[in-house]
Length: 116
Image (cartoon, rainbow, N blue to C red; front, side):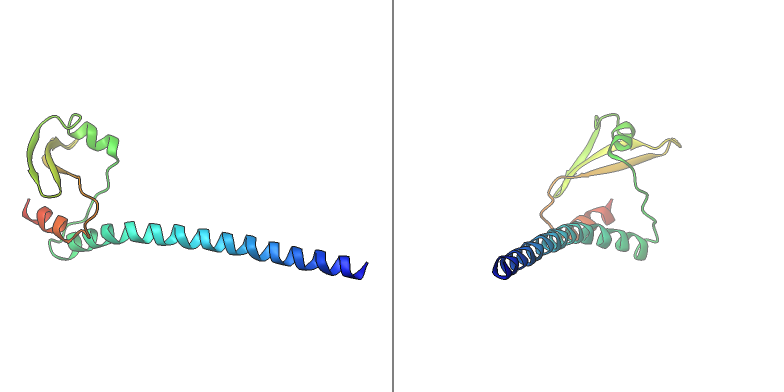
């Protein structure tokens, strides 16, 4: 009886460690994935705030599609995507750059945005 109880206790302890380890590993992978994608956006937003004293405004993709009328009027194309003409609700014309290449670190994209 003692030997069976000891075996069951060791098995449960190992299973618990595996489950906790799996949960921790999954959490770490999710955290790393989010940080990798956020770092580019953080760099862009800090560039907009510090160099140009601009405050970025976030729009949903559906709002951007409405502003550009489903990306109808193309103004040009840069190294990282196409630029479309759009109109804000206030009536102000805007240039909307649709990022095409996502493999870059964001510095070249920021330079392109600064020239617009």
